[in-house]
Length: 183
Image 1: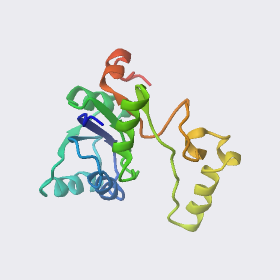
Image 2: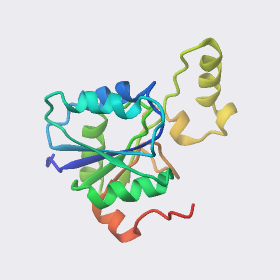
Image 3: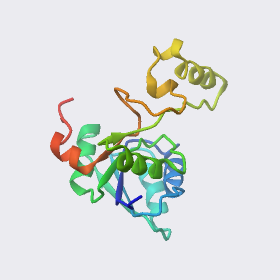
């Protein structure tokens, strides 16, 4: 596998309760190539920025940027990050989510070996309270989500109409253009 440079984009707003875990999951990636992390903050009013800034003062092999989005709209955050991104492969992660330690490696491997421009994996919803656990169970059941492949996938490679935390080649993003900021 060629070690393509990867950019992980995280559009956030008020994710203080989750951003530490999200970033630690990214920092735990087994991918030996270069990973750039671009966080675009939609002007958080909680401690999100402070938590990120505390992390950035720690020595890291990752290049981490924290940018502002005064408009507070996710497509604008994505475009701000895409204009700064240096990676050949771009991965979007949300600030309240955790990715597996091999997520980046698997995305890069599948893009390179399968001849596709975009990949992702299934989403496992995790509940941290009894009610949230019941909701998580429903969100991973065909009964609860209408058999959405990205929520019920059992590990098989397949085509899907959408995926969480997508990884795309820079080339396909350039062909498609930036996000529609009116959506």
